[in-house]
Length: 467
Image (cartoon, rainbow, N blue to C red):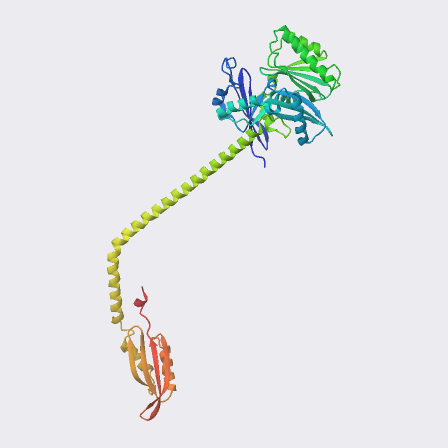
């Protein structure tokens, strides 16, 4: 499942800062915000002026979302298109590092390098190697960090323009095309053969078009670049030229370009295509492995650790909040129950003495009922036993325990009347049964008699069964 992601492109010139926020999800990519902010007058004219007007970030940092990409103008970069005999990313990185070391006037450890694959053949790749001074990159990073904004990506301004032209302009797929880009911070050229760039060159020093010497240098630089490409890419001298500018070009420069490319020179306005900030954000949203990335790896690692720390802090605060909520709820419930218990305890104390007196009165009542009732009295029990007594059976002993049992002992000449007597007692509705019935042979006055002993169970009264 593809989650929603945001990318922000920031582009700055000597006049303004522009930024665009894009949102990407399963349905596509949409523009969330696009704004500009003017740079304070005279900012870059001051002595030791910073590379970027960081105070602008104080007003816009809350609007920046997701991966933040900043552009670097071509004048700050060393760029070279290379034809390399490999398509393996690991081998390409090693080859590009060697090439940068050979063409750069600075040691490699003072540069941050990257590359972008322009095209792939079966056994070779055409790549754009890019290097930027590490000092410049670090200064930009510190300026943003001081305002609480962390750059996640540094991209080449000319590559963002190239991406926009590929998406929104008519790029020749056959033959050679020269693209001239002129904007506040960008005056550069891209030479394209059969739809694939073969050269990116900055003409940054030549913005003063009113100076005849500047126009002559522009003519010389463009002709020299095209001539140097003939030794490596044979496309003849004819080419189509397209100029994309922010403002109208002076006639002198237009005449020079017409002389260089007599076939066709087409003029376009940059405001006919999306802003460079949108191009930067779109490149970040569509980022691939072979995409120019000039942010040092330690920056990425630092930001990854910050995100982990931020997530850990949020998770810790959430757990602590939940724990405090549970403790609070538990304390509230405990207090409620304790209050209810104390209330019941106080009410119980009020009724304790009346309840004790009622209990004693009930016990006295049960005792009176127990001895006042005549249903299972000794006389009633004796009457029941007498009625069940056969004529030949004698009762020798009658022990009565109120509400418990009657102990009988007696005798008879033979055993059968005794058994009949015990059976009648057991089936009597007045008693709950008999137990421990025993018979034994007795000798009385020289005559043999059958003796017996039995316990007759009395039923418990209803009052006794109640607690």
